[in-house]
Image 1 (tube, rainbow, N blue to C red):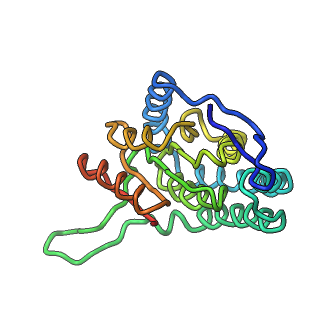
Image 2: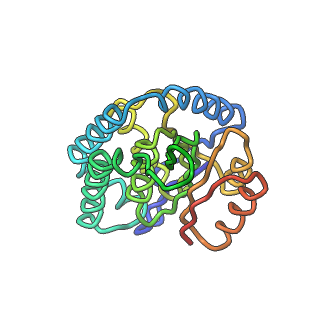
Length: 228
């Protein structure tokens, strides 16, 4: 059982049943299928989804902030500011994502040469507890705008925050399988990195966690982004 514990009181707020191997397999397959369709959507469609997510974040700012405060102890005012920043992040990538990802022409001896950005597939996000919403949105928004899909393994300390982000993304109109939260241990997340259905990894965490994830990703030659 994964427990969410109030750091101010030490009391258990909520318990969560971890996802088992069969559930993980189902999620990975669903992400693979969803990714084939999501990558075909237009930048305008993706941006519209992010703007809807921004609206939902602002409309539920107070309740989301309360969840964060209960799970990881952030003062309520700071928690509300974090949710507002998440809404801004969604709008920023909705406004600028297409320009960031446009093809870049380059000089060469060929008739025409350019650098193009294509979706990778399913990106695994391994995120820490300290900014339970922002750490997710700052990765998720550009990932979605780039035509990728994502699976989130958040810190077990903020499982309800992680599930709230998934709920809002679904309510914003993300298709089934485009973004899911998995409730698993760190060791299981390391094994997940090696799964052929994971195309890349973004991790924010300790040097030890980064070393383990980078090693697993390196064995499969998968791109990684690490903030340690």
